[in-house]
Length: 314
Image (cartoon, rainbow, N blue to C red; front, side):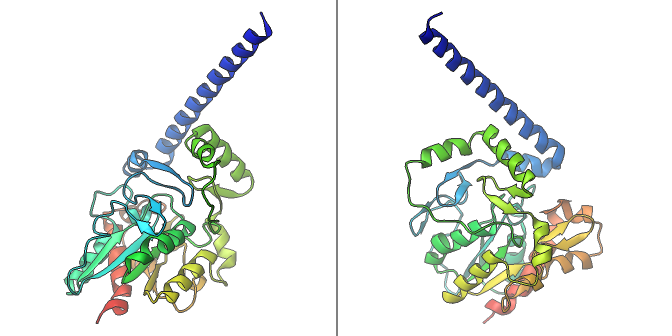
């Protein structure tokens, strides 16, 4: 066999091996989701489509739209509509807990919060920008680049403490195409996840190193970096801000963003105490870990409304 034919054979064999490994990685991820998550949440996550974003790391292909300079042209209903007279329009940020993984449309806690405030006669609209897997660094960037130009009346942030390092804004690069290709390769993602696990980190979908939630326990005496930056940004723009204490179910219901670890001077919605006070079994409030059931979302929404009411009431 000539050297050229040998090289071509080796190239084809390598490509076939990579395709087989990629297929195995996709199967492994799908099996892992089936084993780790209850059906409603698993099916919701599998149905979500995300694409590479050089600024945010990644973004949903629908729902949030794309970041383009200071313009937010997503399909989040109502974000660009003219306000009705007297309407107060705010935005809720977070991960799948905020978005409502496993729930039908209109059952996530931002909807419940809006309904509770409207029952009190407050003309409030809460636009839900929660997205499965989003961290506080991406929320900070969304607020800065996409939402502040829309002149919001208030912001609600439901993120874990110390969940991510700040994002570094990168100018467009010729390497973005390579990064996008690697982002969609499940084999690459599995290798990243394994490497991060050995370093004691977890990885978001964009492949960024993130401090595990338990790291927040030893650091509650100081404000979380991204939460502090969000608070400073909101204050500098005169926008009322509300944090949510991020209820979590693991060996009991507890908060992953407790008030004592958040920046001082910013009100915190006591969602976790509200869930505990309900006196219901955790299984009635959570699908698992951080994903809320319809009842759990209702209770959290009402706790958020109670904390938001004094910030926006005339």
